[in-house]
Length: 193
Figure 1 (cartoon, rainbow, N blue to C red):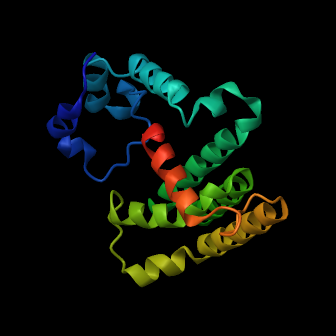
Figure 2 (tube, rainbow, N blue to C red):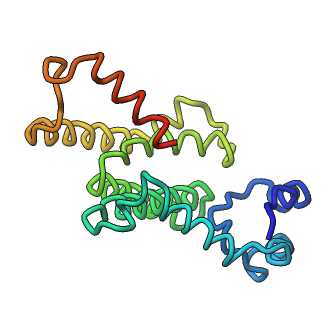
């Protein structure tokens, strides 16, 4: 199979206003002509297999795949994505709108409990509002709407800092000089690319 950037160009009308989360599993029944075209051009199992392979061999993800103690990444990722899915459905409106917002918030809380990295979700939701959801109701209204997410993010960040400090994981400038940190960064950055 080959890369498929042309599908987006060819099917721009069908893609307008849609959020595509399940790009590796097209379905003709669910996705219509766009799904049929994606399947015809080779998307699906091969795409998912390549993505799984890259996830498994990338240096920053090997621990999550090979070491059971790194399940926090999987837990965090699962609930982070669930929160995004519930939020997108909430934005679409409908009868269960308040319940979807509550589910998004609950999934976010579970994601933070899995890993503190989840505190980035409120900013990600704001970016989703701008594109692809195109919710142009004003920045202030969007931030107010996400206030519970920001409060949870702040609480999660504070809990992470306190826990790391109690465990001795936060180094002071006295224990690790600025030069040492710069050298460690210069060494690690290219490795993780």
